[in-house]
Amino acid sequence: MINWVWTHWFITALIVNYIVALSAAFFLLRNNQNPRKTLSSLLFLIAFPFVGLLIYYFFGLEYRKSKIFKRKNLDSHKIISKWNDKLFLTDEELAKFEEDFLKDRLKLVKLLRHNEDSPLTLKNDLKVLYNGENTFKTILHDIDQAKHHIHIEYFIFNDDTTGNEFIDRLLAARERDVLVKLIYDSVGSDLSGNAIKKMRNAGIDVEAFMPVIFSNFTRKANYRDHRKIVIIDGHIGYLGGINVSDDYRNDLGENKHGYWRDTHLRIEGHAVKSIQAQWMLNWFFVHDHTEQEEDDMINKDYFPDVDEWENKPVQIAASGPDSDWANIMEAIFLAINTAEESIRITTPYFIPNQAILTALESAARSGIDVEIMVPRIGDSWAARYASRSYFEEIMNCGIKVFWYCRGMLHAKTMVVDGQFATIGTSNMDYRSFDINFEINALIYDEAVAQNLNEKFEKDKEDCVQLDPQEWEERSHFYKFKESFCRLWAPML
Picture 1 (cartoon, rainbow, N blue to C red):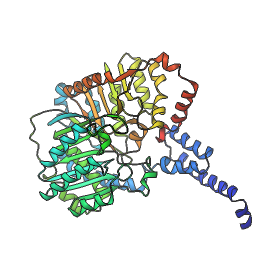
Picture 2: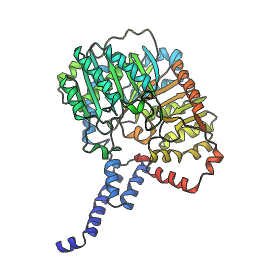
Picture 3: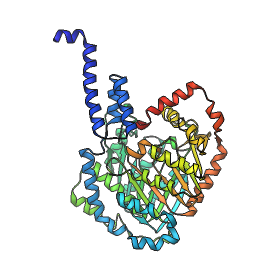
C-alpha cells in the first residue's frame, strides 16, 4: 500500500485534495451563504485541484458566526451598553427633528439604531476634504494640537514619506504626554519592525489587526480592518477613503497610479463619540485588556461634553463579520429605495450584490437620475473587469456610467436627492458589504450633499461617459474576460 502511494503520489494527492474539497463543500452548503458566493467557491474547489483549496482558504471561509467574532460581538454589546444612553435620541426626540432635518430619512435613522446601535447625533461641524495632500495637512495640524489622546486605525499605514511624517508627529505628541494608540491592518500595511519599535519605545501603543504570516502573499485575505480613522481628544474625528501612504497624495510627484482622487471627512462634534466607540471596540479586540481598563476609557476624557454650535445630523454606520447585520449595505439599499430625484455614486470598485443592483436598476427605470463614476483603469485588473461586466446591464436600465480618466478614483461617496450623503471606507462591492470591517458617516445635511454633487460635476470634466451602443459592440474576448472575472466577484 505504501509503495503504491509513493509510486502514484500525484493520484494520491488528488484523492486527498477532493476528500478535503468535499468536506469544504459540505461546510459551504451547510453554512447557507450567499448562493452566488457558494457556487463560485464550489466551482473553484471542483475545477482547480489544489489551487481551488487555497482560494477557498483565503477567500471562501465564512467566519461571521465563528467563535472569535461571536466573542467580539458579545464584548461589543457589553461595551456599547455603557455609553449608548448618553448618545441615543429616543423616537419621541427624533420626531422633533423630522421636519427640519430628516424629512423622509427617518426610516434610515431607525434602521441603523435597530441594527447596530448607531445613534443619530446633531451637534456636528463637517468639512469634506478632497485628496490626500489636503487631508494629511489637516490631520497633522490637528495631531499637533492634541492635548489628551490620539486614536488611529488604518487599513494601510506604510513606512514611507507620508507614514514617517505621521510617526514623527505622533512621537512629538508623546513628548507632550499625549496618549497615542495605533491599530494597523497587518495585510494592508507595510510597517517595518524598526518603525514599530521606535513608536513602542516612545510609549505609543501599537497593535496589528488579526496579524498574518507572509502578508505579501495574502493581499486579499478575508476579514481585514478596512477602516481609516483618526480621533483627537474625543471631539475631532476623521474617516473616509484615504490611507497613510504616498500613493494617496499628488504633491510628491506622479505615483504608480497617476493622479489620485479621493474623499475624506473631518467631523467635529457629537458624532465623534460614535467613531470613538467603534474604535474602542476594535482596540479591545486586538489588545489584551481587563474590564477595569474598559471602565477607565468610558469617561469624559474620551467622550467629552460637546459644545458645537453647528447642527448637522450625522449617523455613524459600522459593519464587519462580527455584526449580525450588513449595516452599511442595508443603509445604502434603503437610501437608494427612498430616492425621489437623483443618486450620485463614486466608487473605485462597482461589484454590487443582487440587492443593491436591483435597487439601482429599479430606481433608474422609475425615472430617477442615477449616475455612477468609476476609474477607467483602477488598481486591480480583476476588479476592473468584474465591474465592467455590470455596465451593459445597468446602462440598459438608464443608469449613466462615467469613466474617470485622469488617474485613480478611490472616493467612496453617495449623494441622494441632493439632501443625504454618505462618505466612508466602504466600496460598492461584496467585500465591503459582507467581509471587511468598514465605517461610514451618514450625513443628513443639504450643504454637504450639494458640496459633493458640485465635486461630482467637476470630476465629470475628467471623465468619459460610456455610450450604451458602443459598449455593447465591444469584442467577445473582452466580454469573456469580464464574465470570467465576474465569477470571482463574491470573493474579490
